[in-house]
Length: 287
Image (tube, helix red, strand yellow):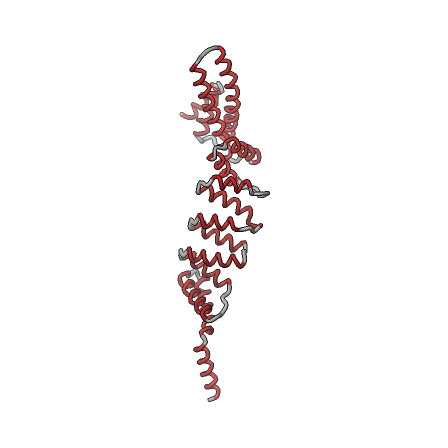
């Protein structure tokens, strides 16, 4: 009778103590989470947290972390954001931060991701921060903000892709001369990097072509010996840019002989430089 009484009393105390349900709830939630049953894990973790907090029990960060992951998998992004933000206020762990940033990226929460990266001072994340902010500002066409990020990057070295986005931002901001300097430096460091070679070749070709047409139009307004002498002088400067474009597209043509766009640029450069035989060869390749 005494044993029965003890067992009955224990059962009664268990029934009257809501916190006694927490271990089983967590076990079930963890099992669902580990099995990628995120709908069930989300429901169970919510029940666990509600029961614990309403009875003054502490909830571990791991449970909140798993709930944030489950929320993200179920597209409950605002809820996931709230949990991740709360966890990061307590401890800006690099792995947790990048996981949160990836969630924002995957769900195209551009403004939220920009705000997140701008807030972090974590030294181990600085290189990733700079590259990602450049990408985000390029996406939103916030070119002044992008240029400012690069100006304040300190010793962080940009990736090739980020450097090209920076070049594009300078170009969009009517600072093509600086863009050309940055591109030339990138080509110097990465001689086989095609995006930089393409930008360089097109820049010098378009610059030379615009100047060539402008000089010819000016000469045609008033043809005489004096204006012809000025024309020859100015065309020498134009030819220097055509030669840079030609050399760059020759490199690209060697790397990718089948690319028709490189052949077209080469043909035009050869014509402007009066290399008629080379231009004819390019013309044959286009047929």
